[in-house]
Amino acid sequence: MSSSQSVSPQKTRTSPPVVLSRRWHWASRQAISFLMQQAVENPDVISLAAGLVDPVTLPVEETQSAVADLLRDPAVARHALQYGTTAGSLRLREQLLKYLARLEKCSVKDLGLESEQIVLTTGSQQLLSLVGEILLDPEDICLVAAPTYFVFLGTLNGLGAQAVAVKTDQDGMCMDALEQKLAELESQGKLDRVKLIYLVSYYENPSGLSLSAERRERVVDIAGRWSKNQKIFILEDTAYRELHYDGPVLPSVWSFDESRESVIQALTFSKSYSPGLRVGFGAVPKSLVTPICDRKGNEDFGSANFNQNLLAIVHEQGLFETHVEMLRNSYREKRDAMLAAADDYFSGLDGVDWVHPHGGLYVWMTLPEEIETSFESELFQRAAQVDEVMYVPGELCYPSATDSMTGVNASPPTNHMRLSFGVQTPEGIDEGMRRLASAVRFTLDRS
Image (cartoon, helix red, strand yellow):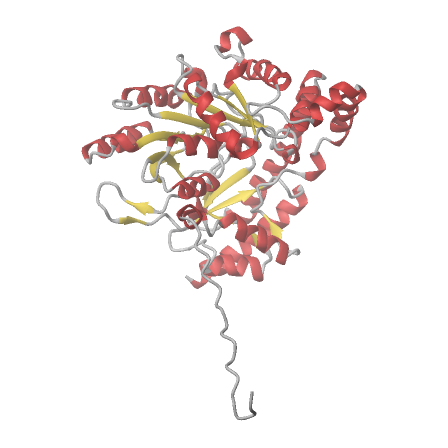
């Protein structure tokens, strides 16, 4: 090659674009990721946002005792360390029939359930996801309370399903509003898309409200009457049932389903024992056991077998009930600390009120309509960056969808906050509420 000849530069091959699925797009930009990022990047911020359990109350001694028992016999230990079944450990499922009978205040026989109808999952969140996957196609409809658990709204988005909000009041989802919404959907030819009604029946995340006993019975009747061309199931999320501090002891929605074929009850030990074990379960209608297990088998071949056998021993040794009683006392004190701080720091602010929950981990606070609480709002920025306190914006807990009757975009309310008392000490709760009130007062003065 002569010196006069030029060498053609090698062509740079551009990387082809990454094409992700529609399901990813539907499920992307989850608020929980942002909240976790803020907590990590701002360690000095007092979080009234995190829905975590109090680390001090985690059952170390109880778990040590159960682990020692589980590992004592090598044959039993090897069984626990091996793969389990898709539906989960039979040892634990049989214990959970007894546990559920205690919750429902009846005998195991009167439950009307077989062990095959208890499906163990990785926390109750996996069950919520599995139920959505087997029942909901894109554009199908799930009726939810307004507000409701925002992570489940993300699950519905990830399925391409539509969450349709139903009005709530101090007694939970309004049954007249539910009937009206179903009638509206029928008039639009959309009733066949309604597959599910989702309820957090005890001390709801986020509102702290519980569905009244009368409405629990009525929702089962409504679901049955409106199941005209296909069954409308009720998914009852009872994640906070054991965390009862005062007020009425309510029967489950599931207990009113005499057929045991309409209500799926989701339960978890994440709040009542340990989130690190990731054990939840569902009391499932017979017609859904195989579909749920078919779907679950594609995901995990069965949830953590060792953890399930460990939790079976916790129940067999009577360790669970004593731990829950300790939890109730601890969280009751924290709940009272948050309500007392709300009285001390917010009672003088016009247009501010809050729910007094009988259990759970949350207090729902409402501000004047002109005060926005979103991540982008002046209040959130002031609270996080200046006063160093964080909350969950209430608008995350409402479906953002087009109104089914008018076709007009129905924007969620923007003046609510979810406040959690689970992680902080009573002193931390008081200081966090003081800081939050300072941010609210500053924002009110500027409005």
